[in-house]
Image (cartoon, rainbow, N blue to C red; front, side, top):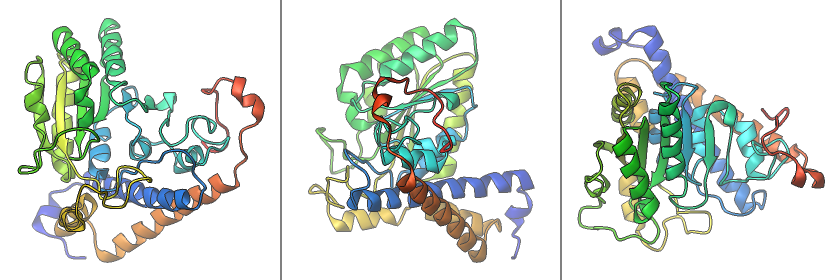
Length: 337
């Protein structure tokens, strides 16, 4: 494999990290595709919201955190859970409602939790978890730790008073919070400026005393750089940040939504697929001599095998026992972990 001048400047450790980020994004993509297949087969019940197209946001942001930091997310959280390090087996088993899942099958697709990794949900109420992250930031500052509270939410959440109240408090109290708006352009029940295809979330939050950045969510390097700056501000001197990360989901809002939805055209979706974050990152690594086609094929095969293993594990796992209704959901989940 030819090595370019830029590749020679990339040390071995950094090159390994870059390839690991690619693997994480591939894992999320193939996991979500398999989850969609499982839902169609009736293996997954209830709601199921896929993350396909937004992989660079979760991987880029979570790559900059420490194990002691706390994370809350929306119900579109499978990708965040995998990027945080929750095993694919445990996540898939939770989607299947099995006893080996992250919450022993009690939470399902929208409520993935792992307190041991600081992954505190998976919340089904739009915007309801944003004040929780502000509270976590307050607790960290009160205890004089250098932990960071990170909150992922969609653009539709800004229509809730909880969003404005939580950000106002974080700004006034200078809390170590990072609010990440995954602006995928089609939040349910909101008004889109279709001429510019942006929401200007950062501008709408200009009244709050915190740093604000607009980030290209399809560019993993840009996401990581913005998140790194936000983390530095949060840890010292303890200051909040709002990141408006503009991204795009390639699938419907949920499994009950047609592939393109009734609100966008196939041509629009295909145009955005040209900026697939996985393809962009793989091309970058190839250009820098850190990846070739053979290595990419091997990586794809490894990830697909891991996802198939997670599917088989979930499918063969037992259902929760009836008495689990009265037991602590946060107890160890067993071999799925």
